[in-house]
Amino acid sequence: MIGPVMGKRPIKKYIPILLFIMAFSGFLSTQILWDTYHLNAEQVDQDKQKYSVYESVFQGLKLTTTKSRSIELKNLKEPIVLLNFWASWCVPCLKELPSLVKFQGKFEGRVKVIGINGDEENPIEMVNKIEKKYKLNFESATDINSEISSKFLIGTYPISIIFHKGKVIYFSKTIHDFMDDKFISLIESELKAN
Image (spheres, rainbow, N blue to C red):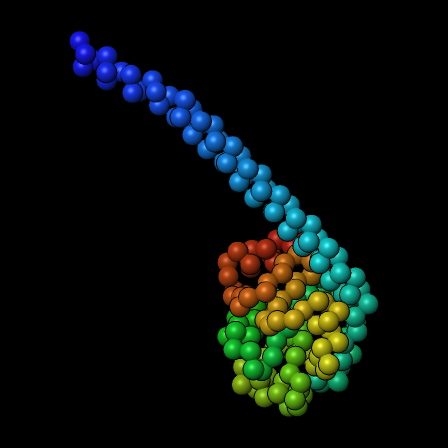
């Protein structure tokens, strides 16, 4: 008789502790979910603000390419414009160029790719060298004194901003595979919505 009574007693003793642990775990889980939601909401707000700046700059930006061609972004006939910020010394930038060349070839006449080159020393010479080496099928503008990247609040490379009729539809701040199936699907669906 002593055995069973003694065995039940310790369990009752721990019930309040177990209830406290369960309640505290529930509170922590709720707090973590709330914080995650709140951080995601803040990131969405920051992205909206950033995209609003990009869209505003897009509307007023005029570029002169290394081929002396003047381009006013808002007047381009292509509904999708991809601005790719790159530099010849940026290894990730150079690694993504082959897929960007294929991408431009796939969407020629429907998507306009424009490079924004950030080389400070001999920029035209550097752009010409990279154009030949990678057989670039799009033009680049030089960003002397970081005037263009400053307008877009850009401080690192590579960066790509994709616009559809002047509205940001995609932003990449790391090396990007422009022939990725999901990315291609996004571009195709935007072109269909044109």
